[in-house]
Length: 111
Image (cartoon, rainbow, N blue to C red):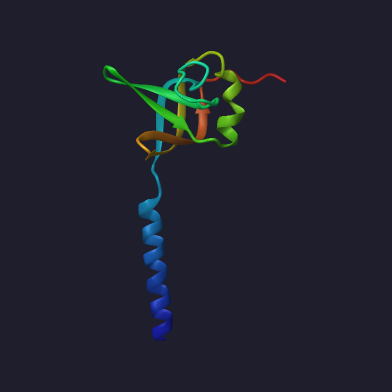
């Protein structure tokens, strides 16, 4: 019986840490644009959501996933305003990143 208790306690600890490290979903609204073509801050095409924070603009780099890549054509050669991106936000190497789970405000793709 003591082995079962240790196993149960270990599982509870692991589950607790998983909940702490999980990023919280955020909903951000701004201008979705290409970091290479429009902003000239990346060497390759990269979706970036520019969000106004008072007088400043904050760039949120979209993590390359199917959703981000699938919507890049809509912003590659021209930014789109009033776009809402929902996803997990984190900071890496001094940059803010969002892993998009939903992108709203872009025109639907034709074809």
